[in-house]
Every structure is written in C-alpha cells, then in structure tokens.
Image (cartoon, rainbow, N blue to C red; front, side, top):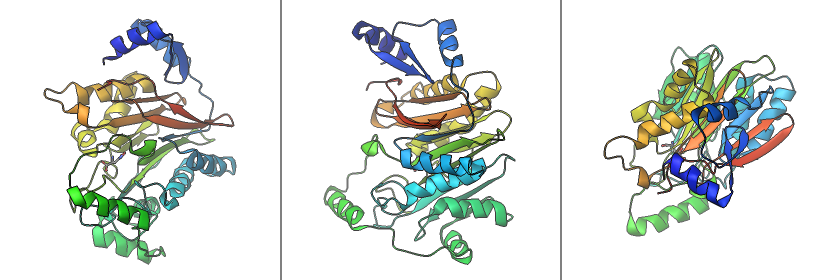
Amino acid sequence: MKRRNFLKNASLTGVGLAVGNTLVNCTEKTSEEKKAATTRAKTALPLVIATWKAKNATAKAWDVLQAGGNALDAVEQGCMIEEANEKGQSVGKGGLPDRDGNVTLDACVMNKEGNCGSVVYLQNITHAISVARKVMEDTPHVMLAGKGAEQFAVSIGLKQENLLTEASKKAWEQWKIKSEYKPIINIENHDTIGMLAIDKNGDLSGGCTTSGLAYKMAGRVGDSPIIGSGLFVDNEIGAAVATGLGEEVVKTVGSFLIVELMRQGKSPQEACEEAINRIVSKPNSNYKNFQVGYIAVNKQGETGYYSIHKGFSMTRFQEEQNENIQSDYYNKDN
Ligand code: SD4
C-alpha cells in the first residue's frame, strides 16, 4: 500500500501514526504539513537510537553517555549487549548459522572524524563490534575478513568460542530438512542491531553488528559491514543505519544516500522514506518478499525511521525516556 493510500485508510479508522518523532492524525497530509510534523521533533541531546526492540542495548549506551563516555563508546557497549544475548538469533553468540552450520559475523563502526572499521565473515568471536572498532583504531586498514579478522581479534585479547548455541543448531537442523532459502521478514521483531548516538558534546557515532541472513550461502557478506550501505556517519550532517535484506541495501548504498539527502535539506524521516522508495520503485522490484528498514538522526537530534513492510520498530533513549516505537508507518502492506 502506498503511503498516500495507507494514510487515507488509516484516517477512516482514526488510527494515529508516528511520523518521525511526532504522533499525527492519519488524515492525508500535504507536504507542508508533513514537513511541519517532522520538524516539531524533539531534539534534546544526548540521544541513542537503535533498530528493533533493543531497550537493554540503548539503556547501556545511555549509561555510558551519562558517565561521560563518548558516542563511540556508547554504541560499542550498547551493541555488545545484543552480541552477548544468546536469545537474539541474528547477532553475535547464538546467531543463526549459514547453510553449512557456521555462524559468521559482520560488523562496523564509524566515528565523528569519519573514520571507520569493519569486520566481515568473522567466526568464533562474540564481540564483532569491538573488533571493528580496533580495526579502525589500531590498524592502517578499514576492513578485515575471515581468518585474518579472527587472528586480529585474538591478538587484542578476545577469546575464541563456539557461537552456535543448541537452540540455533536445532533451528538449522530443522531448516536442513527442506533446505529452502528465503529471507525472513522481521525475525521476531528483533534483528541486526544498528545503533546511532549523539553524545553530550553533540558528536555522532554509529555501529552495526549482525550474524547476517540465516542459512545464507557460505561466504556471503551483507550490507552491515559495508560503510555507506549498512552504516554511514557524517558528524556535520547526521547518520543512518540499515536492517533487513542486505543485498537490497547494498544496491542502493542506502545509509550514505540518507545522509546525503539530509545534507540536501531533507529531515531524517523524509530521507529514510526516499531511501526505501529507491528500493521499492525499481522496475520488477521483488519487495513483497523482503524487508528493509532504516533509522536516521541529524546533527540537531531529530530522528526518522521507515521500512518497506510493517513490523519494524526503533528504540530511542532521549530525555531519560527509553521507548520502543513500533512503526505503523511504512511503505507497503504487501
Ligand atoms: C544482512 N542486513 O546481513 C543484514 C541482516 C539484517 O535484519 O539486518 N537482518 O543482510
């Protein structure tokens, strides 16, 4: 369903919609009204936002900011909460494996100076986000892959462990019976974690960490460790991070696109919508079969989030309030 129609239908039912940070009535809005709605957004700093239901992770990041940590410390430590959470089957330990039964992680960080670090196809190390940070800080490179990334992780003191939990192994064994590969839309509403923070100095950083798509081909890498696709931060303008089917995010360089649209004057909300539109409006787009969601923040602390299908949510910690905002505002209803 196009947003226009969605808004029209929603207005018949009297449902309220969260547009950016603002709850508005579901009457059809003119572009001026929409703009007004998004610019009424809260802009208090510091703030942390994350993809999906991630209140424990945003709470950790918030504590780090309150204790005087910078935005990079906050996103790293916030993401680590989900990496260590074995119940989350799309991040870190307990992530669902590839079709050969191997859990392989992708992660990246980007800081206020525009520096970045990333790991792809990392095995046996829970905190991929910390390895990505160290790639940025301690090596002359931006990206390390596979065995080299693992060796580097060990060299900085991280311990090797089996990331395949019993629950994920069971799920994989179940999957093997049919071996049917399909992207899953909104895995239990809790997926790859992408996190963006602005600290007390007003500086931005971001991070993204994932075990990627369940039952992917061996060797597959998604958008999450690809700077500009899964994550982009420009401390002058804002930042964006993606979740969902990475192949589609990479094809449109989604996070960089959102930041560039904000540079041209769009609000985070408008920029996220445009990036989703680029995917669904492609000729022969197969959008019915996959989900992509973006969250974004600008330098002023306005936030936006948008997805192809319903079911996406953003968690935001701002002004002592940690809230998960379910998005009733999406591009298509299938
Ligand atoms: C990937 N974007 O590997 C990740 C997966 C994801 O929600 O975000 N799932 O394509």
